[in-house]
Amino acid sequence: MTTWNEGPGIVTFPDGRRVRGRALRHGEPSGPVPDHGVYLLARPPEQRPWTARWVRWPDFRSPTNTEDALDALRDAYERAPDERVEIACGGGIGRTGTALALMATFAGVDPADAVGWVRRNYHRRAVETPWQRRWVLRAGR
Figure 1 (cartoon, helix red, strand yellow):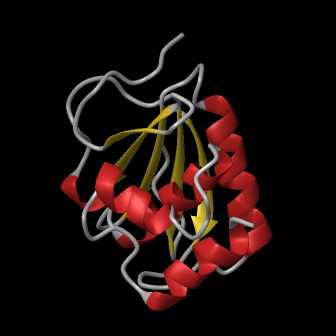
Figure 2 (spheres, rainbow, N blue to C red; figure 1 turned 90 degrees about the horizontal axis):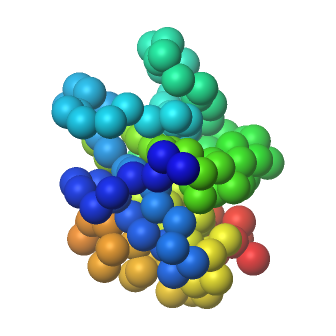
């Protein structure tokens, strides 16, 4: 088992699964590398030496394809008990926070409470726009 320990960006969901959220623009953090990453960007990310999934997701928006985003995030959530999984976007707040809020619904957080939950447990400004909040509500049901 190679899950994350406590540290910057590590979110522990109510069911105990841990995922790391981070900003790609800050470069690679020190410490262990992920086993799998989901990258929420308008353009494909650079190649990584671990498995990765790209979700087309323009900055300050919701994903361009909800089904693809749900599939990628559900897969990441399912991997989290046994792998180090990271969710990342350019700034690590809006898109990453939105994805983490949705993943919190997989762990049993009510979709209506998911934004508040991720702001308390990841970043106080996570989920930056009204349409990101609405996306969590719709996709999390």
